[in-house]
Image (cartoon, rainbow, N blue to C red):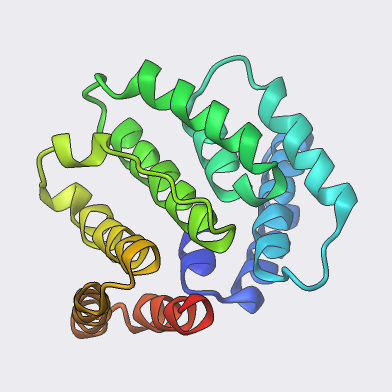
Length: 197
């Protein structure tokens, strides 16, 4: 699911839903996995929002008793379903609570949350600064996140100060994603830059 989502491949997500339905998972697990897939499809169709799916995802997130990997993934991928005030409060609380943990899964989740906050802040012209990321050392597992995050921080620098040199750094980051076999992500960053420039 995550691979299909990050490659913006709606057809593959629909095939995953079919695989879930035909799998030997319990009915409850099938329901949960299909809800996640529906949420990801909802995110890829921003012009045709399905409020029922959005409310189901929001409800499901808060039914999970603690922030485990499923809750992190669900919340991270459905942040658009919440108000900016709710997101800011939730993310700051999560980062404060979990940033000292050594689990790579938690660190990746925190980076995803931080990147999403930056994206949403650019879209809403309310520029947030998530500074915990600079304190986390780069390693191969975190390289993607540590590479993507500067794009958004430089873009915010451009938006706040009209600093055109910041846009040059954004272009360099886009090119680097295209060079390391992630052209879809590079194209998404380019579209984002063009849209909000």
